[in-house]
Image 1 (cartoon, rainbow, N blue to C red):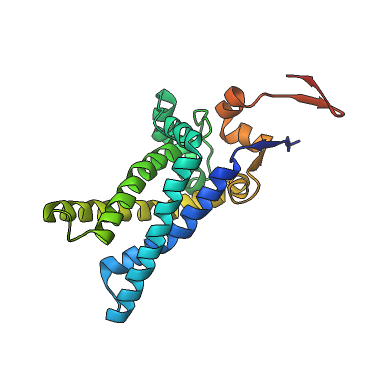
Image 2 (cartoon, rainbow, N blue to C red):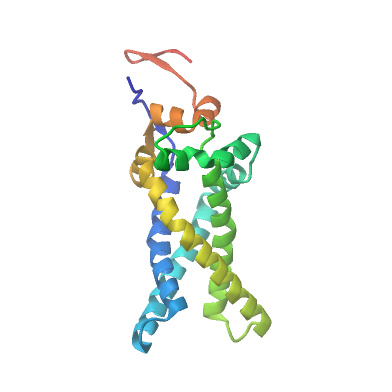
Length: 224
């Protein structure tokens, strides 16, 4: 029988920040592609540009606000994302077992993961670096494009384009796998809680190292 005891995996501050990123990056991705390919007339392109700037300002404010008000969570996320060991090599060798599961209907052994698997950590690194570049370059290109040196503006434009396209390419994969992990998806979009059995299956090291296992009898903890 599945253990349905709830585990807090995503604190409120993280969930709110995730919502703000979702609400800002989705329009940024769509409008960014339109600005890149330029399929609309002048009026449509201007509207697209205005939406892109508004969504960019929203993302910048969300990032700065989260950095200042939840600095401990930022430090913890960075530490998790940039921590790699031999388990991550093993995870990448089988890509988390997802291709075998989806294409071959086959389950292969996957190294035990902590709170984030190796693919999520790689995506997290891209979000940390790419998000920082996008916010900084976007503000310069929007607010002071004529005041900054021309070569600097050109370089920031290229970096903005590169990271924007890369993170946009990551987006459908992230959304698909997020919905696939339904319990975790509900936790991030809801109350932050995942069932114990889900955490134990997908993030066993997180459970073993950070969650204290308990046995409840009635309303008392009888063992730890």
